[in-house]
Image (tube, rainbow, N blue to C red):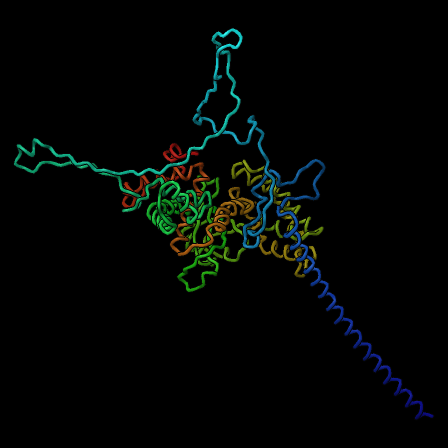
Length: 530
């Protein structure tokens, strides 16, 4: 009996151990399945966010205006700020159709298609064919007139051949009476912008204006020039642009760069381009880049400069800003970091876009923090830098502090849009605080993005640059075009004056002459203003 009881106890113990092992194994399986379920749930959430985002890009509004949590009677925060509503022109976004609302200013004019004041007027008078009275056959007298309509007449441009003829003069008396050789004087024609070329300053200015303001590629300009009476081809036009950009626009560009590097705040951005014949051996399909650098209004006349490069490496930025010391306002690209003598201020517009993509309650909360900062910025816009800094310290700083604390303490994790927005914000927290301590620094990098827009629009028409020299000429011409626009100068009149005057001035020996030809100089403002 004792042995039987002992055997039963051993059997029970074995059964218990077996059941415990099975239970432990089942618990482990449950943990593994639960972990896989959590991973699958996070993956589903990320994919759902991605599908929602792509669906919004495809079918939804392309603006960044706030359309939620607005008090009764209050419009969108960005309705009266069209510059902010423009998205960043990355490769992805440049393929989208941008929709926006145009707020028209009410004026006294009844028609939108009215002619400018001061334009030449031609009056065409219409009198009756017969001014004899049908009743009494007496001559009738005029009692009044009425303007029944006004219409615009277009007079097409015309081509003209200009011949520069140098006349020589000799003294006949000296020739007859003097033993010495008679003196001869000869008139001196001005130097051309391009030696041994038929293109005069007005033609060269028109080619550049049409390409960089009207976005008309050179091969399409050929037909227009032929209609005017000039027989040429797109290769000639390209050579003209490259030559005058190097000879006469580049010195102006380099002087602008010297002035820009003496400032302490810059906006920087970059966008892709394409160069077919590359010196680095890469395919013409590989992306090249155009960098844009822009000064701020609080430090004098606005200067916008483009730099063509084969890459977006940090070395490109370092070489361009050599000698610069101060703050660079930029996006979150890794090249904008760790440069000696340079601090970086990050862009709140990029932060807002990340939270806008997280289309959820927390995403809308993040956007609201950004909207509150922008609402204050509009109020501080016209203040001096010192006053703007004080206002930001008092009103904007608490919002930034509360926002960053909310992001740090909220359980945002995973790979969904919300987690990416939180990570992007926290990784750039120091750069996002920079605008609070300096009134010259803008809250975002939109000025640079707006300046780079002509390059984005232009590349859809220009398609590519064949050579690096052509890409450099494009960058120089774009720089002159954007800087003149910012300073209220007509590009066509400005570069026509440069091509007329500079070939006859000793700018290499006396570079200080170029200061008189900066777009903001008194002479240029008087002669070339819009």
